[in-house]
Length: 192
Image 1 (tube, rainbow, N blue to C red):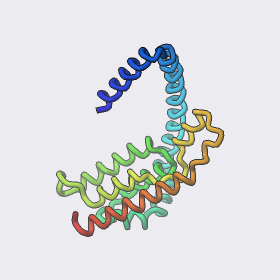
Image 2 (spheres, one colour):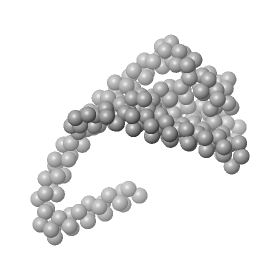
Image 3 (cartoon, rainbow, N blue to C red):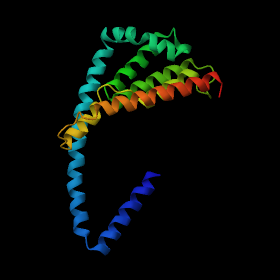
Image 4 (cartoon, helix red, strand yellow):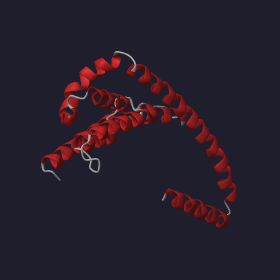
């Protein structure tokens, strides 16, 4: 769908620029913002490499065991079907930690790994389990303590206070998680 919408926007912009006499402004903007996009990509890539590396190191150390113990009561409550599966618990815990650090790009492969493991244990491969649905909601809400990606974007674009959004991020992600999980648990209980 986007491969249809974006070309339409570009064509409309060029037509408008031609008729308003601002074609030079459009051409200048294309080159200026191409440079900005490359700089932003390099900044994000560096941030992602750092945090993905730290997550990989954490997953290969005893740190994951400690994180797993801390998150165990929450994971057991939210995912009762997989209460006794240590591998799934570790994958869910790592996903939660990656999201808390604001690393959506690191959380995605960890989330996919957890979903694959849950699907392997799923008896009915055509239908999501209750735990899988809960995990999708929790992952989508993405509770963030340190919104690393957003802060690095704000820094690269010259924000004078790139961390000023932290309280808003805490409030919005926690509210989204609470509401999403509550509705999910109600739907599970009512078998909707």
